[in-house]
Image (cartoon, one colour):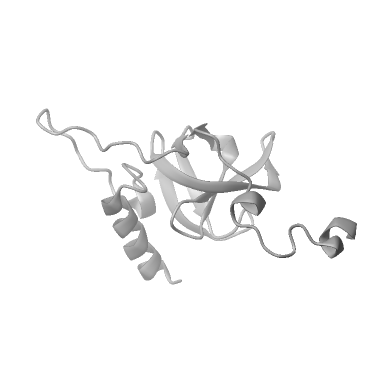
Length: 136
């Protein structure tokens, strides 16, 4: 996915409330006047960004390309989590809801229980003899 199509997809997700108030892809969060209420939180499970800014990655690793940025306080829907690269004491990475993008769980406070991706999106290999008997 190109940067342009990712930005368009992120904008659509913001409009749908999946990345409510996130400031994804350097877009400024909507200003709220006294007459308008802030955007509602996404459905659980969701996370609240605790870092001043958090890179959205193509894969669950800091070696992966940054595809966008979430600002502090952004609320973002979470699909599931995986064990991956260690980041400041945390090995979990969250898959963002609705897109194939990842953020380090170290910088996100989750609201609601976030399942492991292998349990949410099982494959035939998850519980096969070959998988159970494999090393690593």
